[in-house]
Length: 133
Image (cartoon, rainbow, N blue to C red; front, top):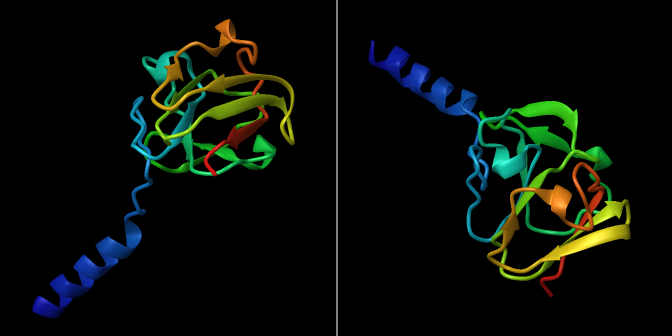
């Protein structure tokens, strides 16, 4: 009986996915830049999010995560509506891959719950440049 309980415990640990550093439902941990598919950090909307700690020149090869940390299989390219910057340095969102096109920069501790009111605009982000050096 004890062996089967032990085996069941080990299987449970192996099957539970690791916790990501950011979190869904509009949270964003220190040391991360968090992008959200919905306005107001996904509040009241489908909870698709992703966090970053380094540049990404092309978001077309990244997918959103769901509220339960699983891959949504939905590309992030041209789908970002809000941002939180908690990484400790400025971050620039770019309209086109490889840091080109229209862009908007966000200082540490800032965020924007409605990217449509910025130069980058809504659903136009294709690359992210994190300025920590």
